[in-house]
Length: 129
Image (cartoon, rainbow, N blue to C red; front, side, top):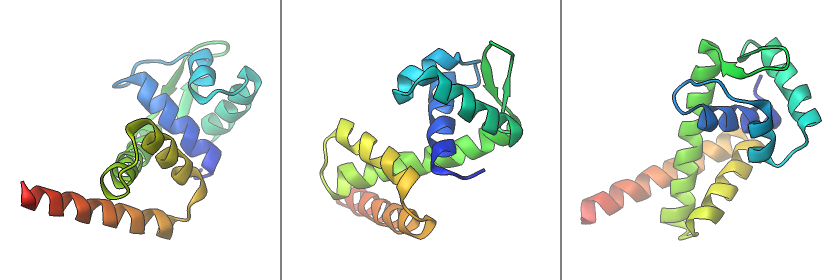
């Protein structure tokens, strides 16, 4: 499952879980600023894809597959944030919003090119310090 919606939800769960703790769906709804009904639908799809385990009216936890996919998404998110901050000089909060939007909207190729630029910019800055 690699839809834009899934990426947003996996990123939110990953960040909220802080190392694997169970997450409440209400916290996911708040983080993503969506209705609880939207969360229920999306979590059902993630569970069917094997990304999460969800108790009936209970907490959500990433599966091993979900952790791997979330880690990949979080890594991309972090590198895209760096691209916006370091290469385009965008403020922290705006860089985070833009990076999250890119995860959901850009093609794989577009994300990879931006990440390559972010890494080059980081290496160049490290060489000057």
